[in-house]
Amino acid sequence: MVLGLDYKRGSARELGVVAVDAGAQVIVACRLTTNGADYAGLVPLIDAAKRALGRKPREVSADAGFCSEANLEALAARGVAGYLPPGRQRHGGDPAGGRTIRPGSRLAAMADTLRRAGRRSRYRLRKQVVEPVFGQIKSARGFRQFSLRGFEKAAREWTFICAVHNLLKLANAR
Image (cartoon, rainbow, N blue to C red; front, side):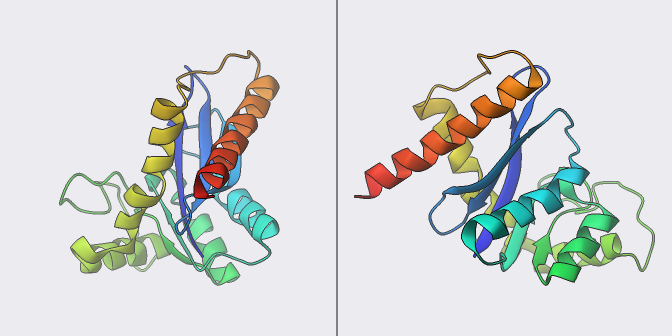
């Protein structure tokens, strides 16, 4: 199983975060956060996906908002291949994105891995896995912002939106 992780703004403060299975484009874990650089959200999403599916993901592709030394270490400890760029990468630019990285660190190793892979990088799969799911949620379902106010209510609404996405995927597969 290959997971793609990403987040999209649902309103002024909240960001919906999902883990999507690459094969079926089904959301296997979701959460709501108010922090764009959601370093603390990667491990809970991986663990939630493992609980939901009964096995750990083989690979995880996520954007720079999830990349930290601790997260790369946690992925290695779980035996999951991670593809997380250390910085915001411009088209064809450096995976470190101008971020100062200590030589010999896991961040430096990840930047080297992504740099060497180039156009064949497994990180590029994130755009094919997660982005269509957000496109379907925003365009086909018309979800542009949260209707409910308050973090707890918005978190429940986001879980509901993700469940609806999965149910519609299931219905259309028949």
